Length: 269
Length: 247
Image (cartoon, rainbow over all chains, first blue to last red; front, side):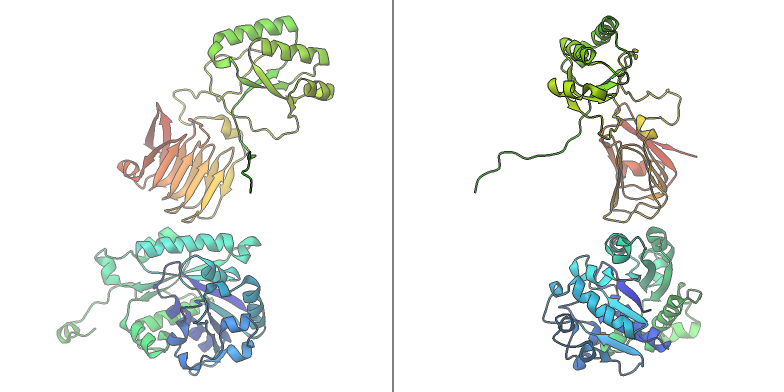
């Protein structure tokens, strides 16, 4: 039975799409047949991060409106086996998504896939609610700063009250993914610490992704950062995926790296 | 298009309940007179619900209503042992509310209770008593075991609210009775929203945006001044909210 996981946050720009791309790639690398759906209709981004923007012919809205079949719209990832992308429409808006339409597409995908990752748009309106409505689990992407934490808290409330599972009295399983974490800035009290965020949101921690230039580089190259094995951020995403699959792994990159004498001398990063 | 002439709305109002335990016309009259003379201002033109503990005959009931009206009380509804009185109640222009689900409202009074006339009053807590026992304490308690998130609102109507998790910033918890938060209270807590001045707010860690009891409130700045992030209780005394640590 396929598992539907929504990647959501309330707030924009915290790393939902980056995380959706990395986690779906990680799941596929682990041998699970995975599809990632862009729910951000009108502001299509996932295709860029996944590096398949030139291959989009049909999109999610076309499938909902039965203008194309799922087979025609799904884009097979070039780098990773078992991975497919269902892009959003750039010319429509979020009202094009209907509960019945989304359900029909998800039901069809469930027959073929192990994991369905729903990349939610920002906000708490129609688009975001459609993305989370059918979710079994939710990855709440949060930056270590107060406005992001409050918005995550808000979206957790919506998950508990406005999802299909909530209506059936079965809670959605929640995961906290802390992104753009910078231990140095935590030390100087410019950022909330992992403990602060965990204390406020009170949900299990799936992973902490360190702030890293590798993320920006990966986005610009259209290559999910998880494929960058050298980067801390990529390794942190790999850990998060393993935890999502049930493994218990210690959290890394929570402390500031002590720069050695030569590194300081050479100005290495 | 015509303008609407009226709107139908629901409302709740506080009313005096007259419990009729026994009915001997003469004794009843003298006891009622005594009671009303003790606070004539309070009782004049008060709307009244007759609660029949004793089953009365039609004649007795008519006499009871006439007596009440003579003392300028205004019976409006009847409940309790209504029995065969339904047609008489109807004829007298009263409502039979014996089927309605009643929430006993607490009515503050300082007068002693007589046998024939008993107000359903909130027990005045003894000055030394650390925890008051308002009438609402006997009402069903609403228990919430998940965090109350930003933007969510929880209301315990008619009783206490117990939350065994945190109340987030931007969340609002309300109760007619007391509010207990066995977690950090970061949001807004409003106890005694229908005017119960004995309601209290208890929390494991006080970090609230706003605390209100029976309409009196304090904001974050004031809350911050004492028991900050400590276990605390907040209660109303002489129209002022007091914050006190709890062990």
